[in-house]
Length: 301
Image 1 (cartoon, rainbow, N blue to C red):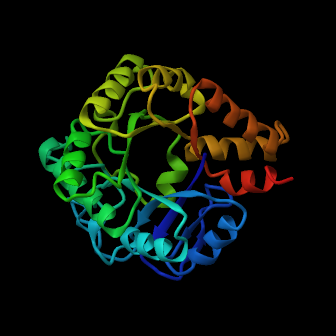
Image 2: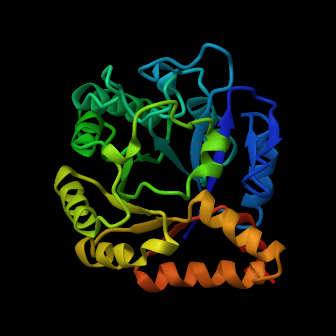
């Protein structure tokens, strides 16, 4: 049930705390192995990988480094598959960490997304991750039509039968992503993600996006953020009733709980479980959460 997000950089030995994301680090491909081993020994079953290219000159307008065979995600997939054969490895599929402008796709001069070129790039990245050994690819960009393009790419490369396509079908724009963008280096320099992510009031848009992604071939669905969007989780449980449904408790939600605990407003363990139970009660059966290491300890007490 628990899926742990990992930030993987292109420095193989990096181990750097993210100040705005309590207890979380950027990891290199070599340094992450002992850490993951300690969690696997406690019962960790699944991770989701986010690439964080830090070298000078790696980023460009089309995010070319996203599917670099020597890049952090592909190298991490191969390493983790070798070290932990039973670990289920998901890869976030997006371009924002790799584009020089920090947006999730290829842009026109006015800052708007070029849809066709973007979804082709996303499909190429997803196929590259699947070829490297990822068990699941999870496109988080919210660009129209990318699920069909990725699914077709997986089919054309004979990968669809063993690669799960988990769609961030209901991803809302808002104020809860700041710590993640610090961790991943994906703050937009210009352009507006509200043009392709859902507005906080967009319940109908979310319902239509979930239905669209069923029709385009998604195998599972992610709702993001979680705590403020439990009505959408409930909608997903209805619309996608025969599919696995995940919530992503995003960086801002996680950091807010830590901040409240530090102020003595809440007990961290209690509020973490309360939030998780809310997601499950609303209809989720998978939880993407930065609390995963703590849950592995707390559940064993």
